[in-house]
Amino acid sequence: MMDIRTYLAEKRTVLFDGAMGTCYAARHPEESCELADLRRPEEIREIHRAYLDAGCQAITTNSFALSAAMSKPGEAKEIVDAACRIALEAAEPYGAWVFADIGPAPAGNRKVYQKQADWFLQAGIRHFLLETLPSDEGVPELARHLKARCPDAFLIVSYAVAYDGCTREGFSGRELFRNTAALPEVDAVGFNCVSGPHHLLEYIQHLDLDGAALSVMPNAGYPTVLGRRTVYQGTPEYFGRKLAEIAQAGAVIVGGCCGTTPTHLASAAKALAKPRNLLPAQPAGKSEARPAPEKNPLADKLDAGRRVIAVELDPPADDQIGFFMEGVQALRRAGADAVTIADNPIGRPRADSCLLACKIKRELGAEPLPHMTCRDRNRNAAKSLLLGLSIQGVHNVLLVTGDPIPSEDRDEVKSVFNFNSRKLIRYVSALNQNLRTPFRVFGALNVNAKNFDIQLRIAQEKEEAGAAGFLTQPILSPEALENLKLARKSLHGAILGGIYPVVSYRNACFLKNEIAGMHICDEIAERYRDLDRDAAEELAVTISTQMAKMIAPYTNGLYLMTPFKRVTLMTRILGQVRYC
Image 1 (cartoon, rainbow, N blue to C red):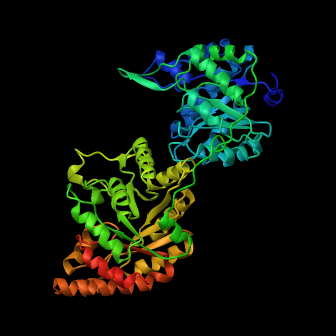
Image 2: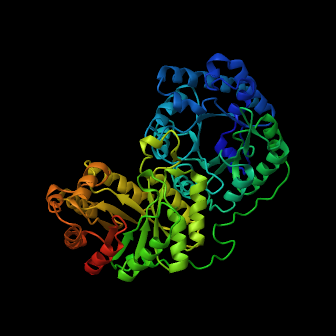
């Protein structure tokens, strides 16, 4: 067997096999494909041979889902040994390469890649495919580990990107490709799964390969559900033609993923055998001139080093919009730079924060900062909404996980979590690469958390994901102030310090006991005892002004929260704090 590096150096394309899982599921839809290495080895060997007869020059061991079975290391090791033996025996008469197939491991447990690599090496495997990855967590460590134990090992790293170029964890495929290709221990890098051949072809045409060996293994197309079965209706002829075009666009390693059978790969082998000319890549952003970005007054003011004030005004719970619109106008006149709008606070439905943001931007010229939760939208809905916001000129968002649905509603109202706040921030940051005007992304920072070290670490991860600043929970205690000081030392982005004007002793007790993320020290709460409304509001102005001055050295501005629609109270506070 020729060394694969020599083969690629001769400008030849390596054709991989297709989806073992697809072929096995057609025979045994209810059985584990990987366990078949132990229970039905002849059927696995037969599928390997079918791909080899189709013209594939490389096959992968039947071990993709092994990472999920690592809780039973004895059985997992048996599967590896059996999968390697079956694949090596099948490949030998054909002179084909055998690649260890390592699928994604659970987040935070990606050291298992190294354990699997050791098992495969012990079983005689020297070629590795780490595939369908949502991030590069664990990749550099595996690459170094593998080459330290076997310097001649060949490693392909492959990421799963949707048609928009992002993984399910919100990473940009382009950045993952660039970072992984720069690792000296990685021999090839590319993409597989999730997308069909047309979209992956379009995607790689805008990649800057910069000499990297590109691997592309698309799905047969996009699935449909017939009864209880997932079916890919992409024809072998279409797949083969597209895979040849992918090779023309620069991929030196090609193959198939979900839905691709030996027939699909036979069609690809036939198409690849035809003479073809290499098509030049099309660098992203050079295909057409992009219009200049729109202005972002809030971001521009922060970038200029000037302090800003954002005021939160709750959206209405019905379709009566008059008070909200009048409130926005009053807050703007009083000096608010932006109006923030909560997204179904405490899990109760209200008018959509993003639609209201568009309305006040369009009709009032106000600068909105809508909150956007991970709770109520899947990935498609989130992207659609973000694109709509951008089109409407809304370019600032506060991305939060979202309050849980109240327990009494959970049987009827289901939460949807495709993201947590860090993943959503990362996703929007990746989306920014394709937007004329990028979003300025803010995150939440709970300075009232008992374990603030954890909150601070999460905030740092948000910054790494692309957050440019934070809005804090209200600072109404010495502990919160100390946590804010610590945040200022640890974070690089803008911090808008939270100010909530407590309006009564009853309000203070409610906030302390029933609202997550709120903490009011006893000294402040006691100052409200027995005060009437007017006296309590006067005290609220005083305390809010004092707190604004106290936190000024550690913040880039203020985040004021309006209690109980008391816009007049907020305009009074704005008059006092706007110069803090």
